Image (cartoon, rainbow, N blue to C red; front, side):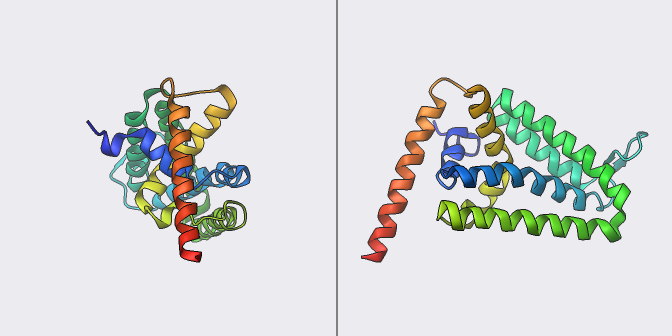
Length: 192
């Protein structure tokens, strides 16, 4: 039975096939979460759905965005997903604080500058180091939704050897290698 949308191994392998170069992976580690955070900052300026008595905590589009990401990550893997959901929550809280401090007139400019800088870094990582178009060109929603979680899983795997289940990394690695080989083969056929 296919897990479809909740198939972590398939998502991770898809995203991993576009991020096999260590420099490109580092670029993503540095820039993906700031893209997520600054998206939440701009969404803080959307209409309030519900305000809490704590200064700055409002339910708005920023909260909904962070909640959807967090719940999706938990549904993919309870342990790492819970950490990712907590990071999404911290980003929501921090984005609210920053948005209030900056105000809309300055906030949108800061967000625009940060987004442009981070996205340019990502495209340079792909063009110069990965030498492969970004995953978002093949599957925009999957790439945008999985990027923060992919980066977190990469870090957890490298720093503490985390695997959502035994054999996960081995299986993903085999799928990534097969995808990269198929991509290279199709690229060579186009040249020939």
